[in-house]
Length: 132
Image (cartoon, rainbow, N blue to C red; front, top):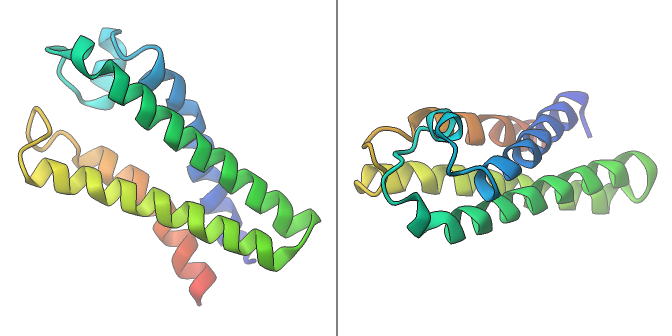
């Protein structure tokens, strides 16, 4: 697997793992809400979902890191498969966030633009490089 693909997949994984505590445990903090571009109104009603999304993202991040370890220290083809599956999850989850915004489900509307690009760009780069 190409170094660019490994770096972009690995960085995506680290970002997801780092954001997990914000989504899962600190979502009620104003600075986290500003960072994630979400409104404070109704946070108590969505904390369950933010915890679950954070946990799923962290699992995708851990899966990616395991896949990268396998690429470099184990069965490379299996590791590449794990990385591809995890990057596809990251890419599609990021795009789903953008679709939710287009449907008017994100408040304030348009607030997901930065998050959509940030969460989809690196996995997309990794997938393109792997496919090439």
